[in-house]
Image 1: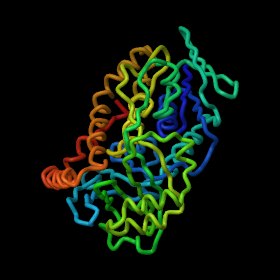
Image 2: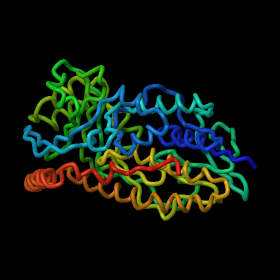
Image 3: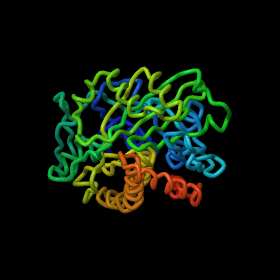
Image 4: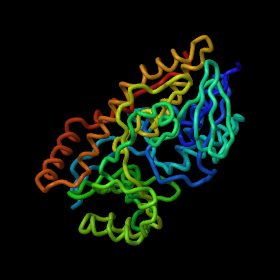
Length: 400
């Protein structure tokens, strides 16, 4: 049977994998559970390791033109004291920079490139069930339709249906105790004072919450991406937190950040919409594949957002898997085993680092917050650019 790969999930990893398969001469179809929309989610960072993958795909220039290079992290406390500043992902160190950008821009760039290559992307195709035999896998969808392929790749995120189907007794996502609210905000006072400020990402640590913000659109320097992590013991259900009145949530955020340095209050008051959701993590899976089905991205190894690596790891997965599948002589079982062997130690190290960074964003006692601030200052002073170098320097070579 001529190879045809079914890709479940049309976010970042799915279209990226389809493009690499196309480069390798392998046909694929992408199935996305939700309707086609242009404006997806809030903002995110694509680190240099992820930007290298976008460069290989051919959309890095588009992302660079629409986003803002994130050259520096500024770690601060809620009173505005700078605890430390370190290089984030400047091109002077990594050749290609980290970029802060709206998620929708990256998604549109990948989808357009996939469509340009003639790769089908089908929407409102929510995976219902899977059936495998010795030569094919059949995906059945909630709308009653089905598709047959030689392999199926689950790129359907932290709440992966593909993962549930191949590992029905396996680990489930767990709530980390942090709830994120964020979005975009525009105000004349947010125009950066200088070039350094334009390319600086602010990470503000308080005793009861965390607040981050940075510029993401070079055409709109008065607009920022922002996010706040709040400690909440109970895991709110999707129907519950989506129904919270925006203004009530805004009042809670303003109360939590009362007395914090500006422009925190200005950002919260100016944000037209408050995106929100719990932060989930997934325990280590014993395996990432079964039969003719393989998981990639958050479906295989979800990472909390505190290291800014979720999208970049998903892009790495897509490129690494596409490269392994280029050889038609290698059986899929060997490809799946090699993929997990090559990727697991790296992603688990990133996941551990993200969890460590998330611990500093929880509600702390005054003494614990005092200690955290001094640890941040010491790490920034001692490590500097080396703080992220092991993550950002990673590179997959497509040719060879």
